[in-house]
Length: 352
Image (cartoon, rainbow, N blue to C red; front, top):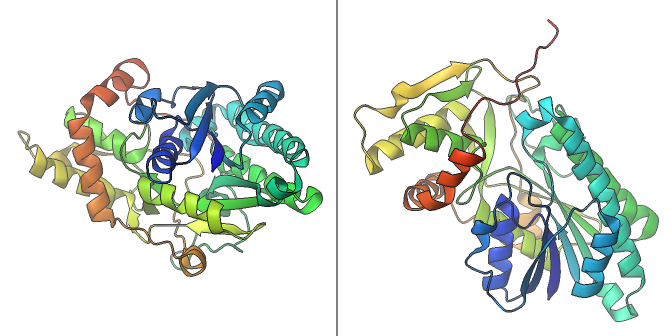
């Protein structure tokens, strides 16, 4: 299979590229703008593989995307390119609107034109997979789970932009017949994660003896999904998912943020003991605006229809993640020194 993957130099995108190139043998054209969170070093293992190609391009640039599709002649598009950090969306929403909404629209129109020009057999087999987030559903109460029919209720500029992109994809299917699929995933973690997100930020701060910031009371709950399990789910949805359908992908691993931070401290103390227990570095800080209290995904649909299961528990996946960072300082150290050093993001004054 020949696929175009957008955002393939990002965290989830690079995991997907590595999986489909090595485990599936697919031919991949990786299209990425190479913004701050992208890293071609995450793709070193496959960069010389026959059939893999990287193209630097912005999904908002219709002419470049048209050329990519004409050259690659893909059987499918897997759309992961997005601005994704909630904190950054609070103080800089313009990039999120441009990439997540305008970029998705531009890609959909390019895909529609390309798809419309395919011969009948290839047109019938073509798929457009849009990868999204559980944050579009808003915040859950103390009980219950997000399912595919949960009403959208985004609370941040990031989640609003992703909700809009989801609706565009659905509309292009209903209006134009474009054969689309949508996935909404829970919080991903694992190797090659840019260190602005909770787990790598806490891990690297703890290694350096810096404060470990916990927003509010730390009781916000998220469902955690190991990134390689997510990559396998995406390939499966593309191959076997029903056109026009949404599939929620979750790891069945709900965990409060404070517990995540404490667990990282405990694993690090065991694997690389310091002068004192690292839990002493935990520092409670002002919560971010609009911080959703609880997310939890019910992945029953993808499990029953497609036979997917998350292979990693949170315990096994987190230990693998921490060991990877301990063994791969050459990957993350340049990012800490030259791109993002761990400073607080997303602080704004809000009205009382």
